[in-house]
Image (cartoon, rainbow, N blue to C red; front, side, top):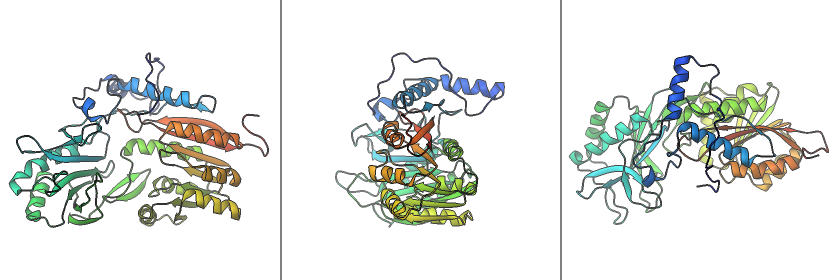
Amino acid sequence: MSNFRRPKHLTTRRMQETRPNPPKEQAKAQRQAREIRWNCPVAAKCGGCQLTRLSYAEQLQWKQQRVAELLDGICEVRPILGMEDPFHYRNKVHAVLAVDKAGKPISGVYAMGTHRVVPVRHCLIEDRRADRIIQTIVAMLPAYKLRIYNEYTHRGFLRHILIRTGHVTGQIMVVLVATSLEFPGKKAFVQELIQRHPEITTVVLNCNQRETSMVLGTKEITLYGEGYMEDELCGKRFRISPQSFYQVNAKQCELLYRTAIDAAQLTGAETLLDAYCGTGTIGLCASDGCKQLIGVELNADAIRDAKENARRNGVENARFLCDDAGRFMQKLAKDGNAPDVVMMDPPRAGSDQKFLQSLLMLKPKRVVYVSCNPETLARDLRVLVDGGYQAEWATPVDMFPGTEHVETVCALSKLREGKTYRD
């Protein structure tokens, strides 16, 4: 939870629609979706969705005001980009397994601040297909005598169910997280599951023997299909494994990426640096518009995925490097190899001073800051503005309806030498 307090009286200023001039029927449906109250029976216990007492229109207003207040005096804040339908958007669904008082298996989420499982059959923000598959698996467990893992005694077999779905491709990956890769009756179990849900494209068994709250272990085997799924963003196709990072709201992710790419103002002649690049999704989506793409990321697994994603999409003007973003920027500054545009998407903690100071030394003509935390965004923007950049505008994007979280894209441009925005 952030320190930003909910306003007592929300203004009625209209939010910008994601598409201009929609047909009357579509506009009516959007308006109705935004006026619906989120009547979630487990919201108070779960704690995952903090804004369910507000209608979606009020949620958008709350997020708009939050970003506007934090960036006041720094830049113009454009209207938030919300969803037409704010429900069932999560393409990654994680179910914790437990048993009820009668000993029957249940699936759900941890109650806020505890490890007590709250049963959840249907979630307002999760993909409906995933919810149905989870309930089928739970119902099948007794017949196959699969024991639920007990985190206090550390006995049992099945710990979690993870479902990932493709927004464009429709592919579905089921990950069964267990304490062993030895799964008696796995062939019959998978056959029945696929018979009940032929939409499933792959099933993976992941082994997690750690006595921690980590969901996935490091070892896994494929029980059905390819062991991964694919989805598309901005015309590029991405391979997603059980461990891969992938935005949980693919529809809004495209909107976020297109907003960021527009902010970069690429002409085809630029060297684009994608800092904190992860699996390379945003950089690869922008690669058609630049001369050269350089992605840097500290996570070695993510860099391997980024290279594979570039190969699969035939992107030949990209190279991905495993390094700390701040350290890499220092190397560039020392060598005088300045990129033309820097696109940065740091974690919630924001960027560090090493990175920001190197950025100011390199002086790229444009910087695009994609933030998942408006508080650290405001902090970092002040450093860049004081260092000679103009923050032109910021656009909030609602990637997580129902929650307090909001993404923001901010466009910055270099001012004349020796001049600061505050002059």
